[in-house]
Length: 404
Image (tube, rainbow, N blue to C red; front, side, top):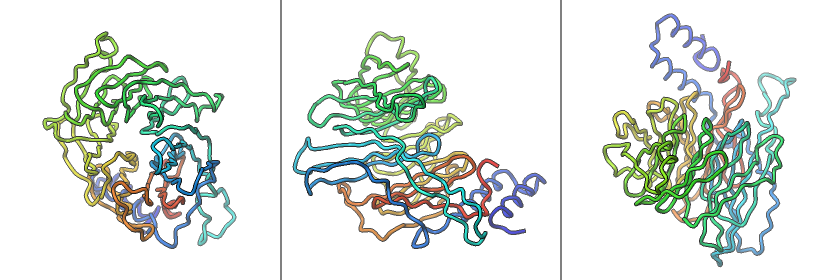
């Protein structure tokens, strides 16, 4: 039986069911087959121009670039576009766009020349405003999926928190709930089960529930990253001095004082993270530190247990790109290489570059590569965005879909 494509995967399943292939080896074999089905990026990949956006710049000195690109609800992708005039500190503009992929449904073609998976990209919705957006998170509350955004207006000292109903059926796409805070905010997180959300920044964080923002909770250090557990009762707080700590949101909301009690999540507080994601087992944390390295943290052992090798990361926060059902972690490095690891073991499966680019400096606005794992019903692929183009790295036609 063939060792690649659907035949290879079915063969591994049969061996596993007969007890001839241990579960751990079975999982590793399946992941390897999935990665082998991805084509090598290069001249044979099809690229798609990003949809034209109605953005007007005032002069030739304006610079347009993508600051972040991540997966959104229901197979969509969320991009943050910034326009900056380097001659002015207040001449800035940002747009948050939700993109959808329109898939090709053509079936009357030769099996040897299958049609591209993607027919085109389209802008589903967008939010524009004269502000710098620092972070965003997807929410789910009362069957609606607003986008949580934190940032600041460039001509003001205050920060702003927004709930934008960009993805909500039956809602006015222009509807935005906004709070203005005196504190400088840099990160946010949300929990779909409880409807709670949190925003953090210099010396504080705020909790929100039912579309209401709480009072300010003061901290002795600055918050760089936030993450909830599955029921929203625990909040992981990553700060610039005390590492990763845990606080009980139920105690925080009941406490009338602004002081917050936290306990260290790790034995060593020297791991300073700017992005983290708690996996569904509730004991494994994937995090990027301020030096750009990606690590797996075991909360039972209270320490990092592995580093995802080869990644050349940025010192500023970048969205984490992972999928637990596929056991894949993907990242685009500062060297423009797209790397794919096993999420659970840290094994590096693939390392490729789309284009031969000059490496950008740390503070440069030159081309930066982004990657994202896109999953929807019975399909998955890795989207790479670079030079205002989206390049989908799609598994071969013989690949057994995720939901079979």
